[in-house]
Length: 388
Image (cartoon, rainbow, N blue to C red; front, side):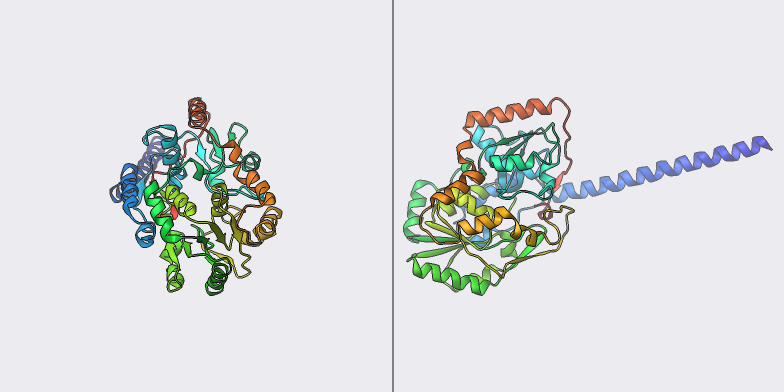
């Protein structure tokens, strides 16, 4: 009897083991099916580079074509968000590295101008990469509060200073002659997890007042691609404005295009404390921050980051750094004041701009750190619009 019971028990264990193996095989098969499906419907990063370069032929004001989303693609990088706004392409081109090289550091995007209450862009700062390249010493000190002790943070000034221009000198001079004295406006833009909401008619009236009062020949509205997708551009048509776009988030020439848009202007303006204000100021363009009481944001996707989840904008407005920025840039000027220069030094850190040799040293140092095996690789094979 005992022999029979043992045999039955053994059969049950074998059957359970076989079932477990079957389900494990099924799950792997399902995952592989999803991987294959994504692989077949995506393009390579090399293809994204080609698609981006193809858009270099477009005129800056052919904004609808410039703003079109690029295809889902297979990332070339260890940390895929290095490819956001073409950052990896910018730094590799600047230092003479091939595009096939994988960065061993995280290139911070955007310009941080407030002390963090929470991690803030935790997906960017908590990946245990060997090194993070920050846009200022202010950002560096903030980031160091949240990253592992093994992560080195280096301050190296704003990203736009490392990029090429979109137009050559002849094209630039021709376009500038057409625009004359140009006011460049950056309306508050939507993001991956939220949409910007503001009284567009009221903002347009404010733009027109500034144009008339300070004798601008032209106005350029630079819209983010997500807002063009929302048809926000239609509300700016019919007012005599030029409309442009720096490009899709996956466009490798986003920053060259943005740099040229800014350099064609004489004064820049926005209704939010956007990174574009710091890009403008770092390129020597006076900036006017229009206080827009109607501006708010609607979250549609909560990412588990306390810095950008429910109620984040109310906390943002109350931040001491943000209040100081609004006070400092609240008055229109056609030059950069001494008080404003203090904040530019703080948040853009132009004095820390790296030469190609200094940037090569950062590439080398991060490579050596990565080889120690102490750092985690982030697996994210396919990049779609929801990721950027």
